[in-house]
Image (cartoon, rainbow, N blue to C red; front, side, top):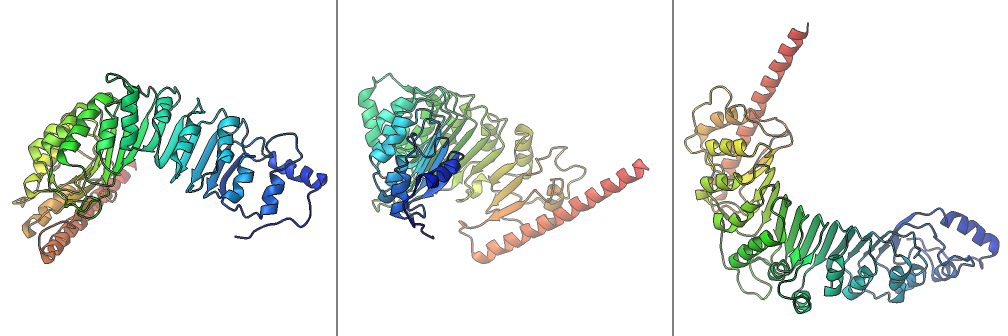
Length: 452
């Protein structure tokens, strides 16, 4: 980066030119730690002869990228009553009074975004200064109990992200009476991350989010089956049954062990584990990326689906596979499409054993999937005799946007057998596309003739 320095002291005519431009500035989205300015430039800009406290009096948005002590002189002069959006990334340094100036001079902040901020209490203190917050995104930053209590009282808050620690839950527990909850009346999107699921599960004992429709949880360690069950049950109290329509749980574990080196105890995601989610009747998107396999048979999947008629995406077990006993037959797949007419993303194991008879008429009985739909076939064996029949079965889909994607990464079968199955599914996909293309061309030809 080129660093600019002063060649001479700034005179009034120089300041007139500078202020003529800075008054027009509405956003400084990428203000880096050094800003490309030498120390003498930063000191000069921080001591403007203007009567205003900020040389950017109309600044609405500021983004600090890895700010340093060097830029602290300038940061405090960016604050003004018109500033509504503040973002700060990778702050390992406490900028002290420089950052605190935003809380004192910027009463109308609506969007506050921070990432990897070492001094979480500073971020929490700023949050407590603002009454008009709409979006608070503190990625990997743990807010304290005072900040959470403050956020729960705001009437414009729509979007919240923060990291959950047990110590915060302990503080909330001692502050509130056992029967009390923190109600976020207008919150729509809630994204939480934590080392373990336990703190988040405890948090939901004190949270009530009646308007949340999008809930996302990210963990560093795989939860136990009882913790996962307790978490799903806690959602029934925290979230309104008709409001929640998107649920995402992502686990990024330390290899095959917990952080303390203890091996992970194996378990499967079963119908009993998922059953508490059936109460959310308007759910559209379910993503559970947990490092364990699925044990969910066709009957159980259809039973869950009957509670989710608006389901669009079901990505459960996509990266870790399903047990062979959990496979869905072609007939079961059609039943699922009848129940969930908007379904467009599905991960499952396909049981096509013995499916060798060429379907007659419309194989899907008039059913269809959206144009952008796709299917993940997880570790699905396929016989040579089934290739033609399955290509006819799938050709009704709106190709080329409809894809058959096989996933054998977690298969216990020999690699040669996995490769053989992948080749056969590729033949199904290719033949299905050819059939669809012929059908499309014939339809176009008939439409052209009828229009003459």
